[in-house]
Length: 320
Image (tube, rainbow, N blue to C red; front, side, top):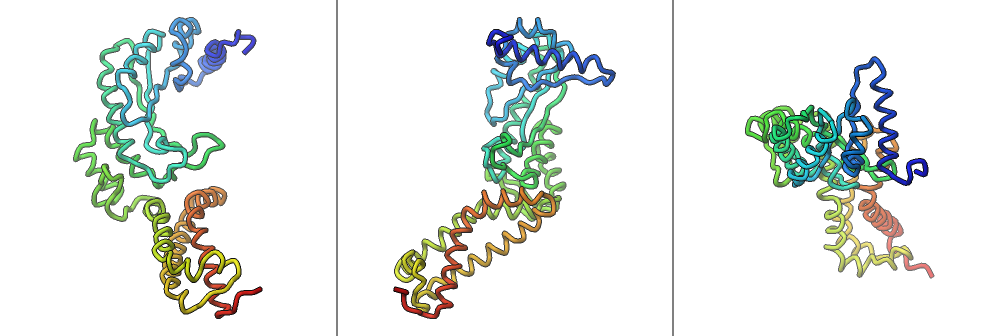
């Protein structure tokens, strides 16, 4: 920074110029693609003077479903003025709606691609810079320290929708029909971010089970424990659990329902874990389970553990 007078843009351009010149000097025939975060902040004259435009292309990225196409147009005009002859765009099919997002809202990503199609169609307004292609990104983490966002199998329907939208120039009936055929679904509901049917694509089992976990687990656990809250508070309160005593006859009034919910979810989760272990490293499986399953299941597991222990004691009086 001190060598560049504290100018972040100058430091960036000096570094990029060295990288671009090195790659251009090699016999590989490669062109550098520059994600344009920093370029947006640097003045036109500075970029022109750096000479990077001769051997590089900016990648203009926006992931929101309703980004301002006029703002995009201004960036395109800027890069054309800088001397770039080609430009790339970047969209997203998953991962950009939240750093801990578990379920892919594919309608959000569909709308993002429809916006990009409008931008592509308007490129004739800037004839000196040519559109080369679009990078369809799928994020897994926002950085090395963040939580996991959507698993790849969960994002595959969104990827299919977005790619067919680009191929067809819109999300037409033909595009929808192709997506349904490829994925093995009966129907798509973009407004609900859901697909109808079981699916036949690799990872479809994970897709369906994550849909259950994300959409139902928390509410299911809360419901079974809160619906019986009066009985639980009366005969299996935290005090009962701490001192391990209770009346088995009264505990059965809520116990069978809680045990059934616990059993059903453990079965689903074990199956999901098994499918995940076939494609992910163990630490990834553990992390996802910790973030999305254990957060809710541990409450239910602890309840069931204490319940079974007190039932086993067969109405033993409270220990003094």
